[in-house]
Structures are given as structure tokens and as C-alpha cells.
Image (cartoon, rainbow, N blue to C red; front, side, top):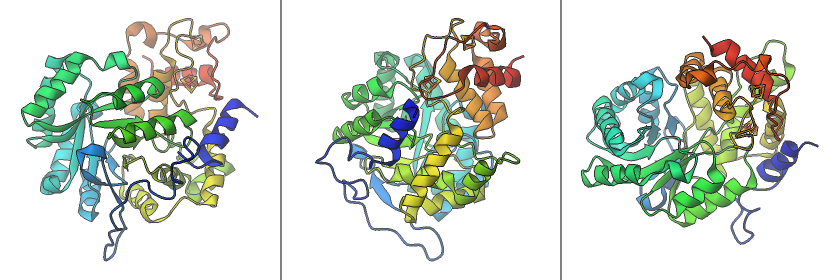
Length: 392
Ligand code: SF4
Ligand code: SF4
């Protein structure tokens, strides 16, 4: 049995989340903090709500990640039927996503929690981004403003923290957050101990290692709001003609099972699955009322086997192993945008943003790959595919 298989069974499925970390903690099926009663709709989904740590913001456990949504009517409908958390970023869709999200949520602004992010490297740049975000979103303030995609404590500079404090004092943001794709083992405890950070937006899904449950548990105890992204572990839901297993996964709802897996962790306050159309919205809403089941567990085991050669969980263990200096996890993430989410343009855009030296590397010309993935990702093959798809 491979290491990834062992880790998956031990942490993701066979053992309940969090209970494996601390025996005194409740089983995940029993929420650690009281939730407000289920809100019933006359003809629609039943939502559950949690309080986002010490922010006091009450949010639906299923939120909306707007990164790859182009159709504003999907966002608008989600708000109309009761989703209350919406997430975007200054950089999404080449800066166009905020405009679409703002227009879609205009009538609901006072009823929802709205977050955006900045990838600005300095206080000045970040604050300029914030002003643009507010203008594009058509709002006077953000509920949460994240420093975007920080993977180590050193990325969360005093300068950027100061930008968030200035924005808070000016009434442009209510709460400060940090988003992270990788490096959570070190970063989440760092953020949990940082009194200036109110909310942590982190990658979290059924492929994660046990330390993630412990880190999230500790951050929650420190009063941080926890928002989960990448909850479907790359998706990979598009039909592959003739692939019987993939067809079964799609037919039986592996993506819904993945979302339910995340929702059963009482320390995750909300989630931001991507949704591009009404069908995806309706599918995700089914997770609100249906608990994770033994059938879901089996389905996710199958899904894990299916995605293992493709899905990079950005653990960082292979960092520095490429003899040509490739940022392997980043390139694999760009490929996941295309192969997993069906967002070719996004993947290529990110690939071409890399420095020219890395964008020019061709793995096929490299004798023997030095990168070893303990989780079974076929690194060189995947990188060759990324280079074939995206490179100039
Ligand atoms: S390729 Fe494997 S080792 Fe490298 S970051 Fe991804 S999951 Fe981790
Ligand atoms: S095959 Fe690609 S990833 Fe592997 S060492 Fe060579 S350049 Fe790096």
C-alpha cells in the first residue's frame, strides 16, 4: 500500500475528522459549537449556519467561491435562495471577476458576507488593490479582506498586516484574513497565534494529512474563522469517454461526497466550492441537508484512486527537488485549473505569469526526473502535459 493510500484511509475516511486528533473533542458528526437551527425554505435547500470565529459573522456552511464563475446569474440566484458567504479576489479572471460579483450581489449586499483578496506585495500596492476592489464590487467595505495565497509565515509581512490595520481603521474592511494553498503545517499555527488575523482561508479536502485537522482545531480554539477552499480536491469531474470508473464517480456524486466530507468537520465554518452553473449550485446545496455516509466514504476512496496520479495537494514536500528549479506544485495547480476545473484560460494565464526561465523548461528534455512525490502524482508526466498545453 502506498503512503498516500495509508494516509488517506487513516486521516480522511476511516477515522473521523478531528476525533483522531484529540480524544476529548466531540465526534465530527456532533458539532463542537451550537449551530442555529436549520432554516427551511418553502421550496428549496435547507441551510445550516455557523459563526465565523470571533468575527461573529453568521454564514451558511456552504458558501460560494466565485473564482471561475462567469455567469453572474448563478451568483445572483445563490444569494436569492439564501447562501450568505461569497468570495472573490482582485486578481480573478484578469481583474474582471469582482465587477461581475459586485453586479450580481448589488441587491443583497447588506444580507451577505463578502470577501476579496489582494496579492499586493507591499502596503501601498495592497491598499491600492483594496480601493480598486471596492470600486469594482460597488461597495464601501469588505467584510473580510485576505492577503492572497501566502504559503509561509515570512509571506505575511508586517507591511501587509499594517495595510489591513489601516484599512480596518478607515472602515474599508471589517476583518482581516490570510488565504493559503500550501505550507499549512507551519503557517496555520502562525496565523492562529497572530492577533491581527481574524479569518484563515485554507485548502482543505479529503486528501489532507492529519495535521490539518489539528491545525484547524487549534486555530478555531484561538477564535479564528475557518473557511475551506479546494474542497473537491481538484474536481476532475469532467467525463472521460470510456472511463467506467470516472463515469461511476460522476453518476454517483463524488463531488457532493467531497463537500459533505468537509462539512462534517465542526471546526470548518464555511466552504467556498466553485460553481459555474445552476446545476453545480443545486448539486452543492444537497450537501447542506445530507450528512456524510458510508456510501460517500466508499465513493471518495474510489475518487482518491482516480485522482492520485493527477492531483497535487501542494504539500510542498518536493520543493527544491527539480534540478531546473521548477515550482512544481504551482505548475501542477495551473494544470488542475485546466484538467480539474475545465478552466484552460486560467491555467494558461497563471503558467505564463511565471518567470520566463521556468516557463521555458521542458521536462521531456530532462534525463530522469529528480522529483519524487510521496502521494503518487506522476510529476514529470503532468508537467509535460502542462508545458504542452500552456507554453508558448
Ligand atoms: S507533487 Fe506531490 S510532493 Fe510535490 S507538492 Fe504535489 S503532492 Fe506534494
Ligand atoms: S523532469 Fe521536469 S520536474 Fe523533473 S527534474 Fe526535470 S525539469 Fe524538473
